[in-house]
Length: 112
Image (cartoon, rainbow, N blue to C red; front, top):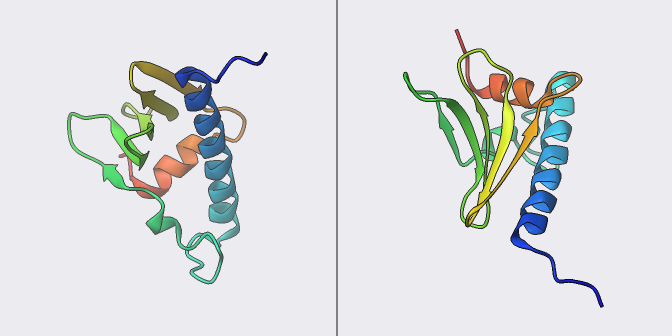
């Protein structure tokens, strides 16, 4: 008998899906296709729910809230990471390779 998925399993699955979606957006950004309203994905400007660019707070691009809450976050000039929260469960994905999370965050926030 298969065990039902836990909150951690559900959060991890959602985090992996969001990470793949962000990689796709970064590929579109790098190709110059980030604002293509004719594309089924629409414009990248419609993707985040909120962008936090306030002095004294971590930079953040909020992707979803509720079940779960997921955001791309960075402190100062550090590489970005993907943070997820669901009830008391947390999950983090770190940037790698060509740094898609950092590129995604930097598209929305000028960190200078």
